[in-house]
Amino acid sequence: MKVLVVGGGGREHTLVWKLVQSPRVTEVFCAPGNAGTATIATNLPIADNDIPALLTFARDHNIGLTVVGPEVPLVNGIVDDFEAAGLRIFGPNARAAILEGSKVFTKDLLAKYNIPTAEYHRFTEASSAMAFLDKNTTYPIVIKADGLAAGKGVLISLTRQEAQRGVREMMEDRVFGDAGKEIIIEEFMTGPELSMLCFVDSKTVVPMVSAKDYKRIGEGDTGLNTGGMGAISPNPLYDDELEAYCLKNIIEPTLAGMRLEGRPFKGILYCGIMLTEAGPRVLEYNVRFGDPETQVILPRLTSDLADIFDAVIDDKLADLSIEWDEAASATIVLASQGYPEAYPKGLPISGLDRIKTSVVFHAGTKWVEGEVQTAGGRVLNVTSRAATLAEALKTSYENAMLIEFEGKTIRRDIGS
Ligand code: AMP
Ligand code: GLY
Image 1 (cartoon, helix red, strand yellow):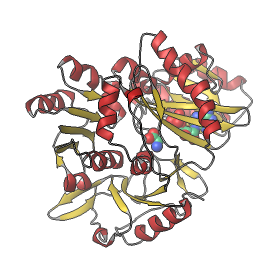
Image 2 (cartoon, protein in one colour):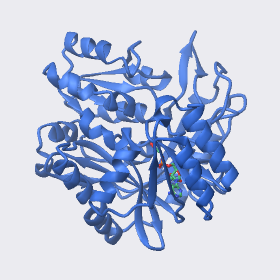
Image 3 (spheres, protein in one colour):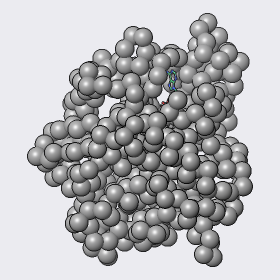
Image 4 (cartoon, rainbow, N blue to C red):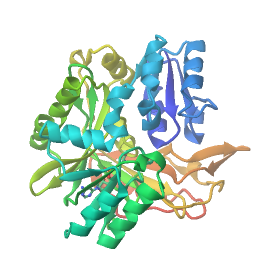
């Protein structure tokens, strides 16, 4: 079977790395891919949201399975278009991907089906959002753009002035474009976070091993939100009891609600959860694998990933036994200087050939004249597995020090 992976970050390199291990997979293509996927698959010069070009390629090259990494093509209906063309593709259709595509939809769904989440208010007019802030006395408060904003559409405002500025930027200046046509203002929650990822078909939910993502750029969870500066698996706070609780009170009622709304979900359901004093509450849903969570979760999967994707497409997940390695895993993100704000690109990367005890999943990299160069904010993910989390972290940090590029930025407190 020939497989097409859509996307070009660390998550997609990890998907490609796992899929090439399947004895049933003969060839893997990655669109657009990066310098890492280029070494184990064939990169295609097609953007991850160019659905017509992806479809033409899949049809012309007899692709037996397409796997979509990022949310934008899913929200834009890539699954609908492939299915209409009779092509096999893994992921939710556009009606179901709205769980990530619209925060307003999701908050209303959670409220309707009594699923625990932060209290919220919706606004389509800046003036009414401002009037709400004038009366509100509890800060911090959280402001969210309704639509997709590349992970940047969430503001935690410490004061009324900050919140007012956020509303202006989202609704009047439209810094996130149409994503800010409607906003949510919600209660600020506190507690440790948990990323819970599940394989989902029309009948069955299978949770993956747990993970924890480190979202802030700075050590001690300070500074701006990023796509994720590192991850560990398992999440030390996770146990069977917590998993059962979240399945029963969050994941299953969400999926049941989606069915009742005529939006049955299949693919990967990623639930961001905050473990508050009042119990686990939903922060957000994503309709795809997490990045960098995938980089620590998939190395622990011992089953064939292509078999799992096929089983989901055919609604046969219940027939499969999905096995995981007990070993822990950790990934350290090497980012460009300045990320998540402006950063340089095109800087040479050295030392990749010195890595022996970790696996390096590439994110923002590309080959230029025989040399690997930086090409994004998050550049590399140095990933290790070991009997204990402490050992996995130690190995990843040791290897991360062997790689050099100008302005290399890492958090030294991942896992602590
Ligand atoms: P989201 O994209 O909704 O997951 O938000 C990104 C990050 O913002 C989350 O991982 C949390 O760290 C933080 N966040 C979002 N909503 C809240 C909330 N209601 N209270 C506290 N922190 C939040
Ligand atoms: N690591 C957060 C995300 O994938 O959205």
